[in-house]
Image (tube, rainbow, N blue to C red; front, side):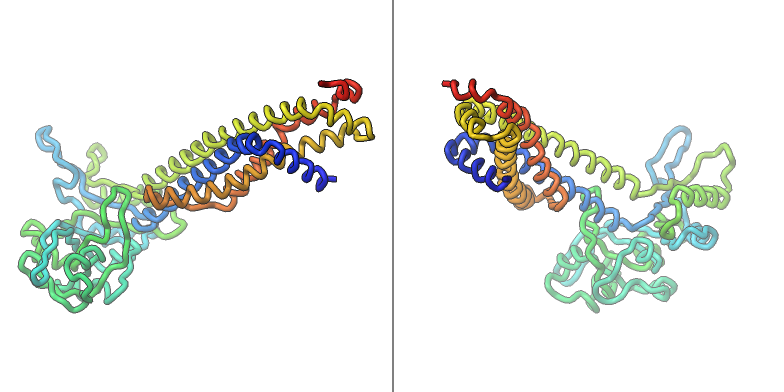
Length: 409
């Protein structure tokens, strides 16, 4: 029965091919737009996930606060109130903390042979690589004995390595930072851009003790102060609880009275990115909802053309009823015809959506991810639209009086 109705529907569509194609156009555009918009949204969320992983999971940043002298407030970090000893205390006294890594940095000119490159130079401890989930693809990381001995060794990010060494292997080569020679012992794994658009691979890392004594000036060489501490919390532990524990510990260590403000700041970097991810998800579904309006417009087009078809085929309907066709046979015929129109449009729309997603990724250089469930939902919705909007014309056709229909001119 259904197979026969499908054949009748295809024959009816071929009779008015251009009209059928125009009727499908709304469905095609709607399905394609939904698939493309969901793909763009999924790509944006995947990019945020990568940025969260590149920052390091469960990460808290401890940094010095601003100064306030005679009402004049300096910028963040204008007074170095956070120290290596604070990092040791955080690691030792807070059970939720997996690693606490003090760091200091500055932008410097790095020279190799006749090439030079201005890049951030960061002083780190061995705990940095665990705290920030940052691996080494070649060579080794900074070791504890490097930090104790203030060894003149360095690791390079892949962008810095490319600009200083080209295609050469950096391991074992010598660079000069502020006229101080350093031996390259490792190449960092690729991290890509962070959420602020900064290239995380454009960096050189040296032992923290070496950076403070040889590169960052006297104010750093004679103190245990650092510019930041990266704190990684154990998986499953509450970040807000860890933040409060760190705050209480540092206030005790810095001997701050209850009425005094913190002389440090605590930030959970992933919170901002997770909020951005939620916003991206909401925007993706909003765009998909807007795109689905085209499906509703396509459904209205199907209803309109089916009503015209009922009018044009009134005598045919009367003749079928006269030879024994029941009302449900007529209803089924026109419902199948509406569903066939929408499903063919849905198939074409899926193809257009997949092609559009790839075109967006290629020409606009936006990351897109095509979700099979989004394709299935868009196609299923297109078929449902055909049935829903085809129901009224089909019911109208099934309720025609056979005698009146045969008299229709």
